[in-house]
Amino acid sequence: MKRYYVPKYINALPQILWWELDEFALFLGGVVLGILTNHSFLGAFAGFMLARAYMKLKYKRQAGFMFAWLYSKGLWGKKGVIPEYWIKEFVE
Image 1 (tube, one colour):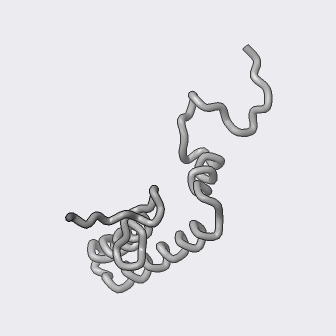
Image 2 (tube, rainbow, N blue to C red):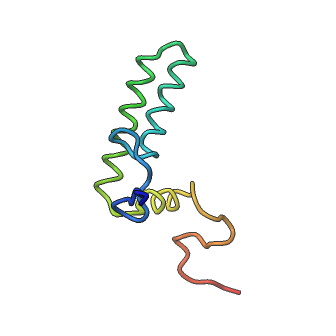
Image 3 (cartoon, rainbow, N blue to C red):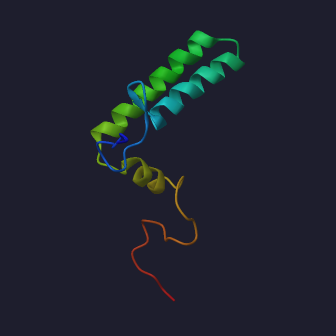
């Protein structure tokens, strides 16, 4: 009989060490940037701090907070299809 991995939550991201995939991508981005600029330790430190700040923001808020915050700042979403959040009435 084969064994299968079943995640704790149905929408859980894959984990690398103790980080989820999105958090690890931030850390890895800092490492890669550090290697490209010939400052590996500083890049790894910056990536670690960025991932840590993201984790604090992610786990202190409700699920989907980042998308809602990015949408409110105009950085995420379908522009032109979905009306802006401050529009209260529509005139045709």
